[in-house]
Length: 88
Image 1 (cartoon, rainbow, N blue to C red):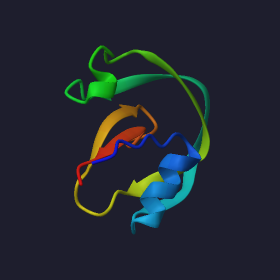
Image 2: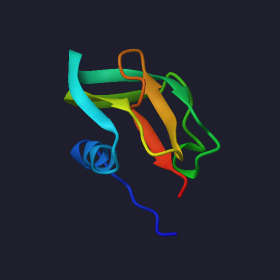
Image 3: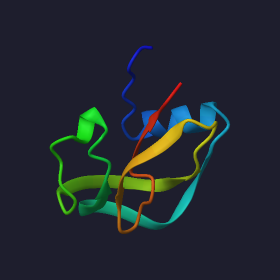
């Protein structure tokens, strides 16, 4: 398995390319946000705490992660799938 990090458009591209759904968001998120949930079992987030401040800048959102094996690893109050990983 090869690790792959998709940030912003890259994350959206991976979801859409593998039959997931990306749609315009009802709320444009720009600027500071705080993580409300974090999967600390994910190595990328092992030392990140809920409430940590992040920077968001997007007008689209991931509405369906597909195929099976996608797991949400971080979210904000406005964005459920702020971060994810894929178990292939």
